[in-house]
Image (cartoon, rainbow, N blue to C red; front, side):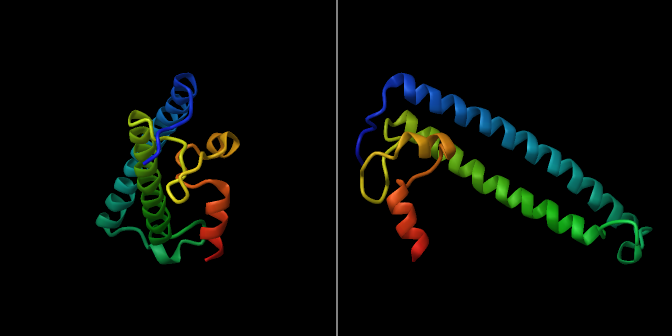
Length: 126
């Protein structure tokens, strides 16, 4: 794989962004775990007539929402960790498809991306 053309200062900037996002994801997932535990507890008590509560979402709706958020968080966390590993290996910022540099504006918007904008468009079109 090509070596990053980004300076050490720029790589550290992106490492900081990614570590911050990682911390946010871990906290969000911790909060979702707590909420899932409450839903599990509520379902285990068997006292909630969950499907007939006119005041809000059903427990199954809440369960579905929270497990979906957890799955998305886990996937993004894997992407963030992979990007941090690419920084460590000095491979960050290089498109995994064409080998060209990924533009800085794209990296600022999505620092864990692995594709330049042209390759991302091509992949999306498929």
